[in-house]
Image 1 (cartoon, rainbow, N blue to C red):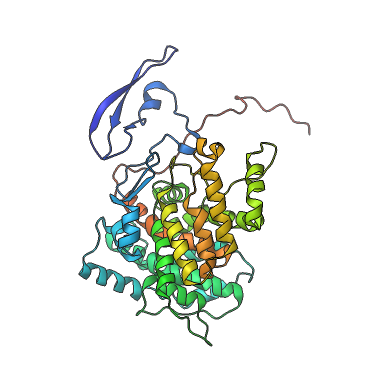
Image 2 (image 1 turned 90 degrees about the vertical axis):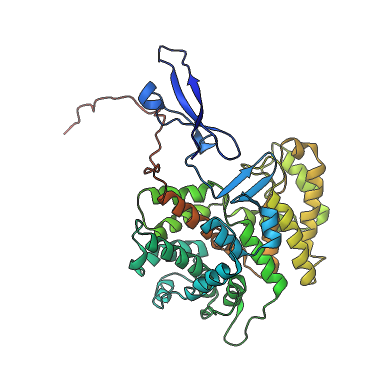
Length: 432
């Protein structure tokens, strides 16, 4: 972390002495006031629900400039990575800090392919679930259960153990997501193949059957690969913060990623693309878009415009532009240019971007608005969208976890609170 660049003097209106707090500067982005000594010096706590103005750590992995609509992975703009690199390049970058050379990439892909098979006993875990169990509930349990099988990668203080756990999580996740899908529809599991690229291998495990092998389509594989790249990491979001918080206690990496999956399951986080697709389906026709937009603007109506706006981006989400292009490519490849859902999406986008109500509120399309349509066109069931998100984000969680473990400043997460309950009081005499 950079050295202190200045001091911030915090003055109080009561008799509490002023407090001088160090200010740190990052490579880019806002400076951060170090609040760690605030309580010891003043007896007061900072109050920040949702952590909107709190830097919980220093990180060199990804960076968002919400005003510019910019997302960087290790300094590289997301639009460059998504158009010139593949997901394996991106994974290596996030985990190692630099893009791989040709030799490094070959070795990295081989290591991932070698670890794609899961322990055969994992299939018995699936049998304990109902066939209609939500895939995210299965993933939470299955990923957490990996720690029962791999005792050679649970020592978080051993760099070799951390590296092995990272490889297994990255390699196992496509297999586990595909197994969850196969179990839900009553089909046999499909084993991974070492000769196929990461994303192609995943699609084959999802859609092959013993009666018919899946035909690899490079356009569709590239589309899913781009989805994975765009969702690979995103600063200290809710699920990443959950992974870090779990990891701060010394929990093993499988448990930490399981915790992240549980957080991602929430509709305000990983379920947003599913909600956006359901909204488009509910509109039904381009002719109904105007009335729907009108209902969204009506304060007496409960309609919500899903897939627009973002907690961090105050400009257009750069991932949305890329996903819109991918949407065109996929629909063109599959002959679905007249797809009614995509037409509805384009009309919603056009109306919202021209309407002062949405523009003034900075409600621009985000990545979730289009990714649901793309995944649906690829054949992904709606309730598996969040599982695809978990697959993509696993590498980001691993990178963030590894960074946290090696940070000497990290302590177990223990937020404080502003207590508003009853003051101390005595228990009244109780009747016998």
